[in-house]
Image (cartoon, rainbow, N blue to C red; front, side, top):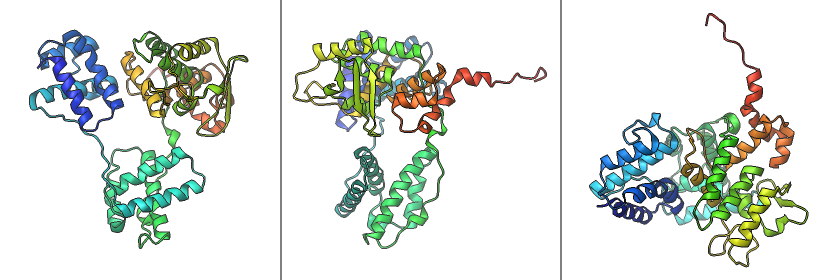
Length: 394
């Protein structure tokens, strides 16, 4: 089979087995596009892919160990191995998660618990996270059969996960099981079987990109040949300049824009606090270009829309950033590369320019300066002042 025929078959098969469109685009299609453009009609084989990847990356990616590859190179290697495997065996070595259909009585208990969480004042995003955590547990453990030994097996599934992830997942399931015991849905409260884990979310240094890398990302979007070029560029610009969260970009309303006074004002989805920014000239031009030239006619007042006139999800907005950072050729290394990395980059840039943590908290809309203090970890200019000379004999 030719390269193009194999790629088309693999992309179709990925969609058939349930891989999300967004995942197919960022983990497979973006890498296949270049080889199809250059070798589309040639027969696919290992030598062709190896030479192509070596020329693109400057090293033998296909056969190199993963610990010597960047994250982007690892993703590329995996994508092309899928092509080769499909050509040889007509199967896909792709793992994907699929939550089993939950039992009706377990779903009823979950719905009751989520209603109680909603009445307690939890935000919609928090409810979604709680629901997903509990569904992951219930997909393999029926409520009627929960015992301490079942909990112990459940805990083993967290091997290799971060302490923060373990704590978050366990806490949600533990609270749910306690609720079920109090409501007499299950006989005994097995909360004692969960270990106490101390985990601090901000214990790791946040992933940031330099001003040069952010400019490179923006140049990629401004020059990209895409039907959503103006939209994607404007969205990424807002996140790169102001540090907006992806959900706030998705929820931005036309009524938030006051071009007469040069102001952009909205209420944050996470904290509810009102943010007001001056619309900088290049940001205003990008928004105006999108609204006047590319935005689809719609009854919706949301600024950023899909081609069908409906709004975007926060995952879609973040996916645009992830795709751009992968496709632009920026060396990501071991850094995270979602939309939040741009928020971290704005904050660390302000800190390195000498602004206080209180200013950073104000710009980002943090309700407390404590939330912004983790960015001091990437204040490289000031950390350099703390460096000690290495003794001559060392």
